[in-house]
Image 1 (tube, rainbow, N blue to C red):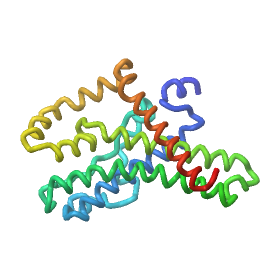
Image 2 (image 1 turned 90 degrees about the vertical axis):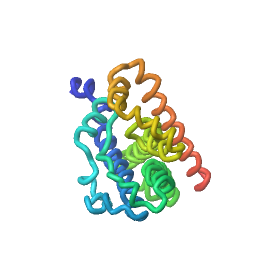
Image 3 (image 1 turned 135 degrees about the horizontal axis):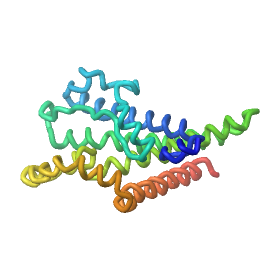
Length: 227
């Protein structure tokens, strides 16, 4: 047990909540990309079965394993053919932003539902208090991890959504220059992943930002339900 606790990014007692919320977050994230791409006229993702809320079509096993070990991973990227859009740059930005925004909304909706269940006395009414504790832990991780997926994916580094948004937003000449850095993307991520000093100024602050964002959702939900 000690070996596993030392190996994994999170403690064994919270591992199920961590994995479940990431699977949900990744699935909704990639589904949102696929849904809007198809809506805007690109059938690429739909033809590959990606306009789906089935986690099996979105989850990347290696990405999940790295998340468990290092707190850093990915899902299967949704293929998008921007040339199929009527307005490739504008619709490309919307499709790219749909993933992170869906995670942000998922975090907010989860917190609001939890406060609503508390308000109507549903949470806290179970004879077994461990059920209430499990629900609370699930909500905590849903809020935190989806907020983290939101801020992380907005980093302007390939292949993250923030990079795609920036690339579509910039003038074509500047965008072409930006694309030259794609060949260095994997090296950059590996350095961030395995060098503690770099992690300390990249991934760690993002978790702090995600915690602050999640806390603001708790505050907002508390105002709605008066508690």
